[in-house]
Amino acid sequence: MLHNTGMKIGMAVVLFFVFAGWVVALGGTAHATNECREESDAWNNAGGQVQGSNPNLAGHLQPFPTPNNDEDQTYNCGIHFSLDWWIIAFQFYMIIVGYLGVFVEFFHTKQTIGDFYAIATVLFTIYTSIYVKLSYEFSAGEHDDNSVAQGYKTAASGGIIVCVCNYIYMYLWGSDEGASESGAAEKAYKL
Image 1: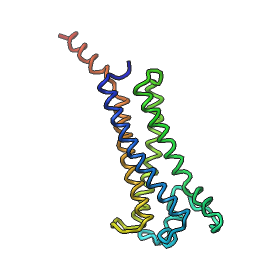
Image 2: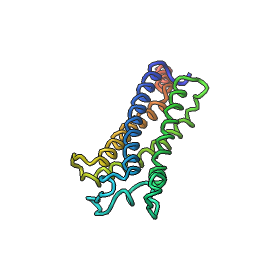
Image 3: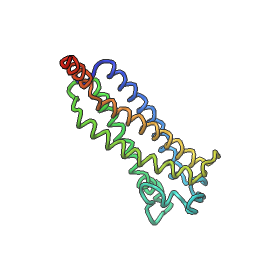
Image 4: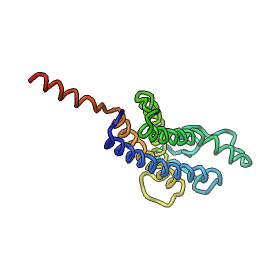
């Protein structure tokens, strides 16, 4: 047995919070993608307040495809946000793997699950960093009614929750419960 019941419950609760953050990030990314697809005024008139350019075109994980033809806006937005959607899909896969690792003995490959969670956390950290930057580009840290900025802020909030909870999960997953028992045995032996 890899983890005791209390640890399994703790990891399951952390994974629930990962899932909750993932849902928030999913909603924010969907909102930003929809703003792009519909070419809303907030999307088209974005003036980067930090860099002075349109952050939608250059400040993202994927540069916007050129030329930007109106007929192909749905395709262009799909390309523009494709890496984001792959990161979100991979995190969902990792939530499932995390639950299987906690409750199904077959999936108790500690090193492999830990490594995959490290990859997912790095990807989601990059995703969150970009969305935080873009939210500042649109609103300079102020609360306003810019719908694109709200989508980016929502995605960044979910990303922060996912990253923090992923780190907690990796810590719990990698904890060595047997170390405290062996330490007690060594102390008893020395006495």
